[in-house]
Length: 134
Image 1 (cartoon, rainbow, N blue to C red):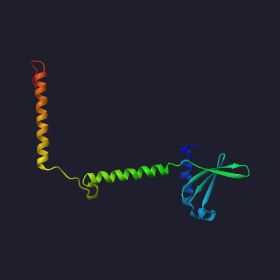
Image 2: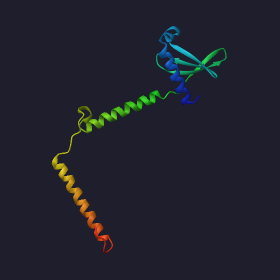
Image 3: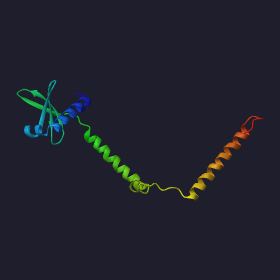
Image 4: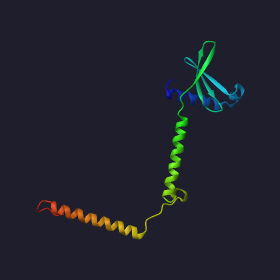
């Protein structure tokens, strides 16, 4: 079974279980859905899906690949990283305000920009063909 099929089937089973809470209570912890080659078993407590096939006189159930745990790990990692970045930046996310630069910092940045522009213009003038004016 492909992971995409498993996710679609899981979504359908979850929707069925959520739409009819009495069904999950009446039939116990697990719900079953017939499918080609066996049954899908949904654990209504954990959300784990298993593919069950007949093995002799009984059924053997194997867990269907589930990316939920990997996704949750990635979400947790990103949350930790986000918190670290907020702390390093003075925690602007909590206050909702990003500290603005001071007038002195703006003047310093503008001075550097002006010097850069003058250098560029001088370079263009020096390298331009005779008769062209910038």
